[in-house]
Image 1 (spheres, rainbow, N blue to C red):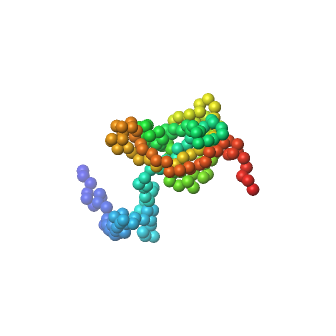
Image 2 (image 1 turned 90 degrees about the vertical axis):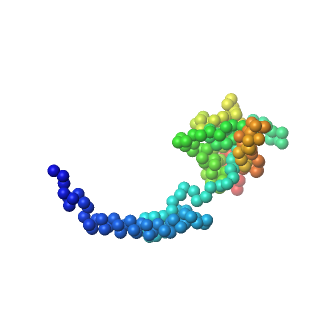
Image 3 (image 1 turned 60 degrees about the vertical axis):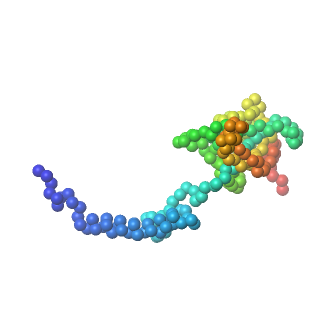
Length: 205
């Protein structure tokens, strides 16, 4: 025997509450929607005290240029203009311009991700960049497992440094001519050459 309509239909007060709540959400959505279409968006902004409809985002803006920190080492001493520097390669982030960009999603290469932030804001890397370079100077096995290529497999380098480059994808003509996926331009020094002794020594008074 089918159930009566009075037993299955929601009570009128509940239906009225849903209508009122829906209308309130639509009304409060006006300001976040206007912000979304604005040329001066405000990210992670609360537009009302109820926190029902707001704006959320991991990043308020994305860079239009790509900068990368390239870490290099050498076993030569002393350092001169003719010193040969060898680059460490990361698993995902751009390094060698001839290397095809990799896709690792959904796996998260956290060190590569941190290096991206370091290129955007050097201050962000202050707490961990020096300890990271210190471990490279020691050929720390756990640290080297996070990298794709260690140019000093037999013995650790005497010095390491970091250079800041600006990367862009090559054009079709450049790719055919140079067999390179990236074109990079040196911006300048990111971390000056440092040795294990220099890293371990206490700061001067």
